[in-house]
Structure formats: C-alpha cells, structure tokens
Picture 1 (cartoon, helix red, strand yellow):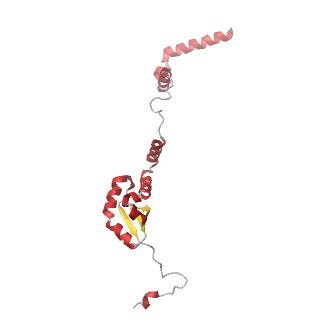
Picture 2 (tube, rainbow, N blue to C red):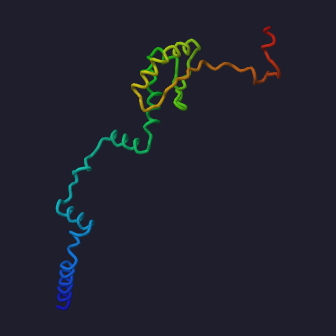
Picture 3 (cartoon, rainbow, N blue to C red):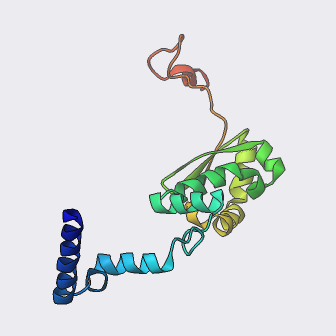
Length: 165
C-alpha cells in the first residue's frame, strides 16, 4: 500500500512540474524529436533508408574521399585501346599519369612518331570521355636503348663514339 502512495505522489509531482514548466515533449528539441518519432512510428523504408546499389555507394565513397581523379586516371590507362584503336594499342602501353601528363611506352620509334601525330585527336577523345582525369599532355616514349655509360666493359672517356669519326 505504501508503494502505491509513493507512486501516486511521484505522478502528482510530475503533473505539477509539467503544469509549471511545460511538457518536455513540446518545449525541448530532443523532446519534440522523440514525440514526432513516436507519432510517426518506425519506417524502415522511409526517406533516406532506401537500399542503394553497390555502384552508387562506391561512387559516393569515391567522391567523399576525393578519389574520383585517381579513378578516372586509372580508367584512362585501362581504356587505352578504346582511345587509340586496337592496332596502335598493340604497339603501345599507357603506363602512368604524372602531373597531368600521360606516359605511353611504344614498341618502336615509328609507333611513337605515329602516336605523336595522333596526339590532338587522342587528347580530344580523352577529355570528352574522362574529364575528371585532368590529363592535358601525352608523352610517347620509344623503346629503351642500351647505354654505353655503364656495364662490364665500360671505360672512362668518350667511349665507342671516338671510333666512328
């Protein structure tokens, strides 16, 4: 019996508190939020809770972390054959992007020269298809030549050039 009296006393104190200061559900921001959540109920498929595809989630993550430029550069390297054609892609490999410059390794100096002549067309396609990549120049390297400056039989001085006249 004593417990029931204490409970009713607490209820009366609470009612006086509500009359004096107002209902917390109406006066505080947290109270208003809780009241509206209780009135509306739980909506598992409400606004902002719709499931999204993996691609959309990854695009959002890439945008939030600032990876879009690096991913676009990777797309340029991965889609090199579609930019220059299959024939030219067989004789050249896009290697990396350094400070807005795409470095391409060519199989021969003839292919490097051919791709240099196609430079403006390639840049145009590249900026249309991959504008986020920030590639503005392309450097075409020919095959690597053997160096006479180092090795087992290198000698100080002019080396083999002095015998050719």
